[in-house]
Image (tube, rainbow, N blue to C red; front, side):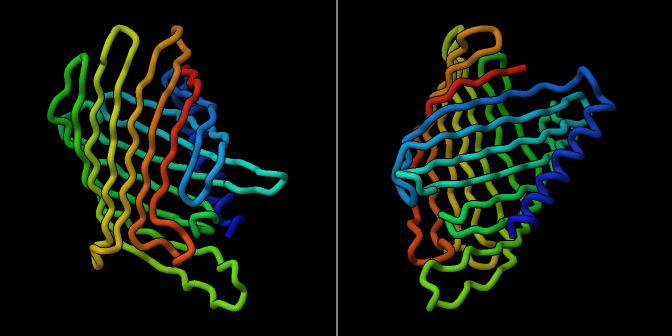
Length: 248
């Protein structure tokens, strides 16, 4: 499963690099590194890195992003998460913008050897001003989920599944002061054929601009999985993040 995940991430990076060669000088990006306190399925301090690269014009927006978490306690690995995404928006400056995306996700501590997803949807921006922006998006998601074998070897392995989900995502962005920004985003993803199987993810961020390229990022994340891959995995996770972000 790890090899499939690495192949997927490699394809994302290859596509991104090839396109960048054709569009030199038109890309923007950011990179952040920080620590956070995590309680839920993993109770400890940890390290996180994430970043993104994008190209945006009046017709298309191409973006790729990654997120990694890693931690050890007394020499034992306690957390390892990798996520990569490739996304394309059509007419990103329009009120209605269709998009297509693929993502790959791995976290054995949450029960996933690999979750590979394809998304097709549209974003509707209904309030866009210099100091604030409001939008909502709706998408259909097709996922292939390969689950981590249970720690108890006497129990049978979980069968892999294909799932169809609906994604509803409101997003709020506000400029609170000259150098302070607020953002909140929530994803609600129910299984189309079983609405009791749903995932909620939200992130609230306050970002302070320190220099032209350096930002201090304070964030709180919440994730709720109503039907986790196994009964041993907790439904809720909470993350408090403090990180420095560089934009280029």
